[in-house]
Length: 346
Ligand SMILES: NC(=O)c1ccc[n+]([C@@H]2O[C@H](COP(=O)([O-])OP(=O)(O)OC[C@H]3O[C@@H](n4cnc5c(N)ncnc54)[C@H](O)[C@@H]3O)[C@@H](O)[C@H]2O)c1
Image (cartoon, rainbow, N blue to C red; front, side, top):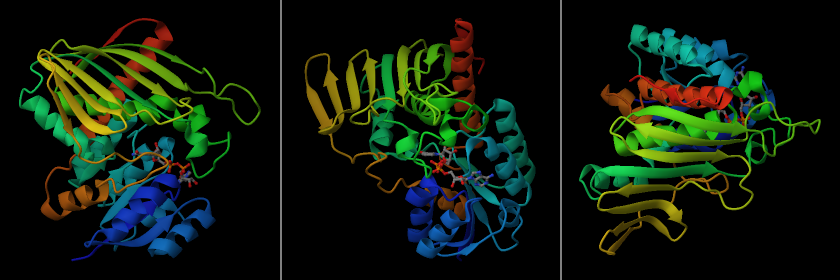
């Protein structure tokens, strides 16, 4: 049976991932799309099919739709995703799930009340090299993980967003809320939870506007850099760096330091995963590069979401995962604002 789907927000993530991946999924058909910028909605519909709606409410309440991708800007997720769930739709919500944990809890309550599938697009979990790394770690390849170092940085959303100017919503506090921390950082804190199967329990962070200027030439309203110290429940300690000002190759690397060796993931452009043991043995796993802003490949997110709907099973990234990641980022923001370390209770 074909599932009719709707897409709300027809900017870059809808254009690069959601629409093409629904289009290539054998079980889905794009039926309705909406964007407050009608040209973007028309362009997406012309390329991938579907009609253009006059409002997001029309999409949410459309009786024929089974599922919705919420690709709207951050400040709208807790409204649109909540209403879509309450209207009986399965929802794939973009990250960050909301701009506050209260917003994320509202979404979770709607998911529980409706019984519909809610997935949050922390797509780094679906990258084959990350899945392989998790298996190797769980199999004890590195022994106990003692420390880690993860980074996510590129040249900034003004080179990615549908509005490719310094006026992009990503730079506005009222819309993006969390700056680079909610854009890139949230992917990496979710990835750490996934790889380590451990919880982050303490965070210290610096967050600053080091470089980006808005359309008036003033420093942007949200952080463009964040550097965190993180401690896990099992006692591992590590660092996480997020930046919109890495003006060269994108950095999406993670290095894990264990009792028996080191695992480097995407740390070398020639090697997806390299494991180096304490005895000096080296193993390289070539499993496939991950998507970058300049080189989009299939993320597998839509196939995973659709599979969860079809089988009635929990999606690969749950609403609870989205909330945990957001809580870690909120704790990092609090630490940066107060200069104190913040504990998280799990
Ligand atoms: N999972 C990922 O790897 C990933 C990557 C990039 C962006 N994102 C997320 O996807 C979301 C969209 O980001 P983007 O990169 O496509 O940004 P974008 O600026 O390219 O597109 C956002 C679109 O949302 C539309 N919009 C604004 N207000 C709206 C509203 N009230 N209702 C519906 N649509 C509205 C805009 O007109 C625009 O077309 C953000 O939450 C972002 O964090 C996720």
